[in-house]
Image (cartoon, rainbow over all chains, first blue to last red; front, side, top):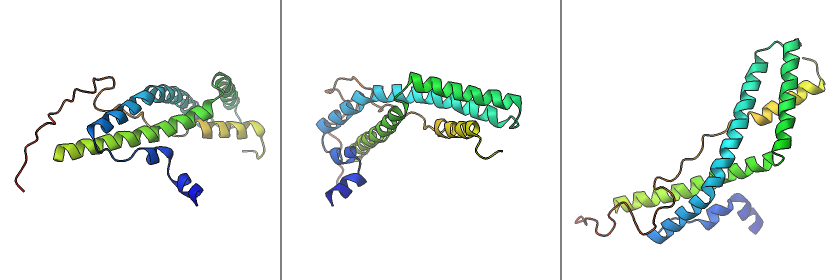
Length: 122
Length: 52
């Protein structure tokens, strides 16, 4: 039964509760900052690759299948893909890591925002 | 479209994987990182206490 509970909630939900004190707020912010650079770096790298493939994808969709141009685009996509797999062998893991950091940092940021609101209104 | 043409299928899968929508980056916290922890931009000492 314990395994089910931990599967439902990500680890950061368990380790970061609502902020009660200013010290806690500072600590949360430090944790946020500590991972934010890594997150931003991963995010922009993945965004660049995604953008490139979105463009290739829309190009190939504009071509009639079976034509020479279509085949050339296909080859180009395959080539770019294998190039990127070589350049970033950990691409999938990095993407997962980035998605995890996105959720986690959003969560911490929200807790800080909630704290600010509660401070402003008290 | 011919069923079982390995290449096209592969390209489809590549595009499916590589063009998944990617959310815009999360912005930093309003208070910039690397500020002195002791300084706080808002007056926190004495907030006006309203008679309730």
